[in-house]
Amino acid sequence: MNVLIVEDEQTLSREIGIYLAKENFTCDIARTKREASEKIYVNNYDFILLDLGLPDGDGLSLIEEAKNAEKEASFIVLTARGATGDKIAGLNLGADDYLAKPFSLPELHSRMQAITRRRHGLKKNTISFYGLVMDIQNRTVSCGDKEVALTKKEFDILHYLLLNKNRVLTRLQLTEHIWGNILEDDYDSNYMDVHIKNLRKKLSAFAETDWLETVRGIGYKVTLK
Ligand code: CA
Image (cartoon, rainbow, N blue to C red; front, side, top):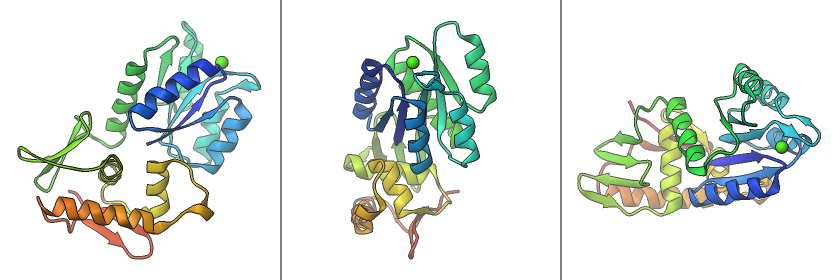
C-alpha cells in the first residue's frame, strides 16, 4: 500500500518511512503543506499520515482538500501530546484516527491495519476465499496446511484485489498501490499482466481461479461473496 508521510521533522519522517517500507508499504514524504497538497492531488494514496504543524501552515485543511477531490486515502493525524483540539478537529474533518507524539512505530502500523480492516469490513486479519486463506499479519496464503509460495508482489496484488472484491480495479490503480506513484508515460501494463498470470498459475495448483477475472481493456476483478 501507498503512504504519504506529511511531516517536517526529517528524522521522524525518515524513521516512519524506513519502518513502513519494512512492512511492505511504499512511502512518499512531503515536508510542507504545499508539497503535500500537490502530491495528494496527483497521486492516489491508501494512507496519509498528517502532522499538523507544518512550516507553511496548519495541515488540517489538507483533509478537506483531499475529500473534496474525492481521494480515498485514510488520514491519521499526528498531534502534539495533549493537543485535544487538534484531535477533535481532525476527526470532525473525516480523519480516521490520530496518534499523539511520541508514538511507537508498531502502534502506528497496528492502527493502520485496524483502519484497513474497518474500511473493508474485515473482522480479523485473515481473508477466506475459495478454499484458501490469506493471513494478512503473517503475509501467507494457504490451502489447509499447505502454503502457496507467493512473492512479495504477488501477495500484495492478491491482497489488494481481495480488499477491493467485486470491484474492477484498473491496471494503473493496482500498479500505483503496489509500486507507488509512477508516471503514466513510464507505465507498462504488461508488467501487471505477467504478475497476474504467475499468480493464477500458482493458485491453480490449489484451487480454481475463475474468480480472478481479467476485465478486457480495463483491469482485474476478484469476485467474492
Ligand atoms: Ca511539525
